Image (cartoon, rainbow, N blue to C red):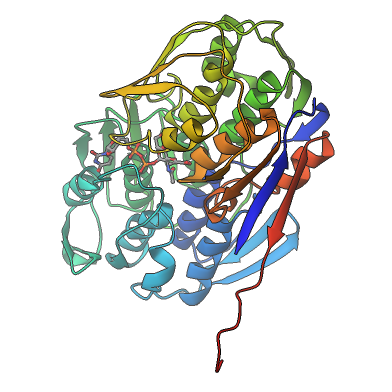
Length: 428
Ligand code: EPU
């Protein structure tokens, strides 16, 4: 059993280095399958979703070698499709990118359905719609995604997504890079990690234009080469530390960020009275004397990110007045509110909107990380609370935050991880 223990109340000060972006890294790692040449990926975060991705590739016959703590060489020359271990694939969401990568490289795929955070139903119909438009016959049976391209190779197509999906956009980009002919994706996601994935593929010789807009064009090429590629910084990790500063009455310098990616977060913090100073590749966040309420609706990029919903809800608990936080991406993202209530939060959920009373003084309590970003929010609440908070189920947090304990301790937080070995039972 492992959990975090936080003694709240410390003001934080100093600098935090943001790691590479989880949701870009996992796409790029599986996209390495498209080339038989070696790829060197820099700024790779040390998180369990990345380690699981490497384990999956290795189980498929790829070679993965760390060159230093954040740089990894991936060689998929001898990788074999269709054999990704089900248990590993079920551990993470982004394993669905294997389907696009296998279809692109081998013309067929057999991969377990993905896992990841539980936000209610997480359909993959748009991924399948895209693969089918590219000429694959796809079915989902017995917990597996099965797909086969006619004549063993995908062909270009025009695809209009019925809703904006980061995963479907990235998956179809991966699949279309090596397809015969041209592909046009309309109503594409515009997230920075979509752009990063396209930039990686282009560095390998793909011909992709328009990433970052809602129309992306791909001219299929016959093969891709290896490359050296630097993953962008994680805007959600950065946003989490920005909110940690705002919640603990602190000033933090947050390094290795792209301020443009943080605009929606910075804008909301400033509305609440927080000061955000933007520089080329860092921001300095200074807490407000008094936090004021605001209303937020999560939206696809460039809107306010759903992956900042729980952290922002925690901050809104501390503001003066009633705030409204509406979730418009996921059906069921408010499970963490029950945990915040244990710490004294007064929040009512009305359909897709959380109505947050404000002026909360968090009290320490034993709480759970119900998912990855919820876990980050629990840490923020624990940092503000009087007394000793314990956060359980921290495996969720470790999926996406590189050394969160070390980073927070380095700026003065009193947080530690406790590991209690499983108690041996009689006869074992
Ligand atoms: N959707 C469909 N059909 C599909 C795909 C998506 O209806 O085929 C719906 C979803 O149910 C959801 C919406 O479209 O309501 C958006 O889903 P999207 O496909 O954009 O999400 P995703 O690709 O599965 C990624 C991130 C999530 C993040 C969302 C939204 C990865 C590995 N995951 O998920 O990140 O919340 O985009 O930005 O990139 C996290 O990092 O904590 C996390 C959950």
